[in-house]
Length: 294
Ligand SMILES: Nc1ncnc2c1ncn2[C@@H]1O[C@H](COP(=O)(O)OP(=O)(O)O)[C@@H](O)[C@H]1O
Ligand SMILES: [Mg+2]
View 1 (cartoon, rainbow, N blue to C red):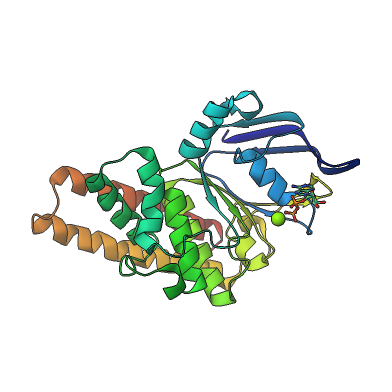
View 2: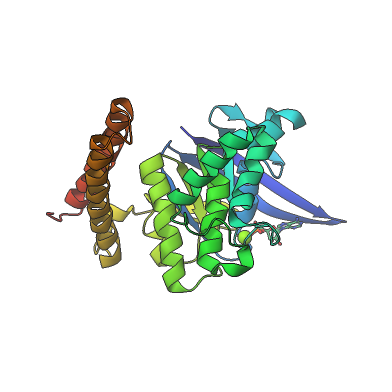
């Protein structure tokens, strides 16, 4: 299990007033799963994400994330946990406006102590992953909201954490940009195997998740249907799967060419090809599960 939360309670004290944000919440999440968390404003979504992310402390209960019991970690261990296990994407873009996109992504790597050379290579790779290889030198103000969120996603992935927490990552975006950002989150889940817990209001966003959980008054109310169990599968999801398969086929063809021209080693070729084929078969199975022949 990636996450096991048991009987989680969070009480905020505001002077003499106590606000009970979480009231005995239970949640389990498997490794590689993508969950959409929905619920009314003030229901405790951000509080839950902040506790799982090690940014806030539980008042009671147990929170296990990748075999670490967070309530027992000391402050030094918590810093290490935040650095190595969790990547955060917030609703409002948390980029530094005076730095370029590439520098924003580089920042977490500097903290990690990577060499200049390593950082450059990794930043390029991360910017490619979010489809912004040609926007490295742009400042946040020179990017669209959707592009900024993709830079934020690249920065969250910088230290290669197994868990991504996204708190309304598309909250401030128009539909088209929201869809693109969610598409990238979904890829990060399916292709990189990252476990993703995402808060959203948007039904179109929650559809890409394996499960949708509803939180109300500080507890999880219902574990609603997974995508496959839905009666009508949105066309956009099927389109996304199809276009991903097409893209992978293009990447496989490119890969063959790179190998032939000696750009990559035999070992690199096999590794990359195995990865792509694995993803392709998962996507194919998903289409099959939805009853679509492709
Ligand atoms: N730092 C804080 N101090 C006091 N109360 C808080 C604090 N953060 C959140 N709350 C309260 O906890 C409840 C849950 O908030 P939150 O987790 O932000 O909800 P959501 O993200 O679902 O909108 C709300 O009643 C909110 O007012
Ligand atoms: Mg919130």
